[in-house]
Amino acid sequence: MIDAKEKALLGTSIASQKKASDIILLDMRRVVSFTDYFLICSGETDIQIRAIADAIVGEMKKKKIKVWHVEGYEEAKWVLLDYWDVVIHIFHPEIRKFYQLEKLWADAEVLEGEKE
Image 1 (spheres, rainbow, N blue to C red):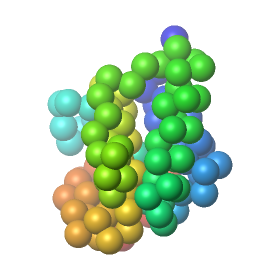
Image 2: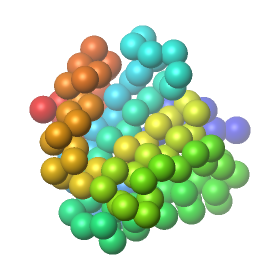
Image 3: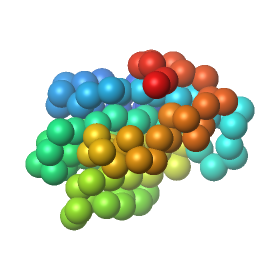
């Protein structure tokens, strides 16, 4: 069984392989009670955003890790993949800039990437 941190790092690796940009991994355990990690990244186009999401879901599935909930896939401006203990956000750059999750969750420890 893969633990939450390994799952988050796997998602980070897959996103990187699909050329996601501005990848950041936040440890949310001391900040919220609903998840352990946030993975936030960006894709330049709707097609790339979906490709990143598809790759993460596909690779996780190969490891018997099932996504609990997906939101935003059709619009592909902000795709959310909820794995309970890891929540993955794949943004279009303008949408990411608008919501600024990194600033909203500024108290979270950064494990990978840089906060803006």
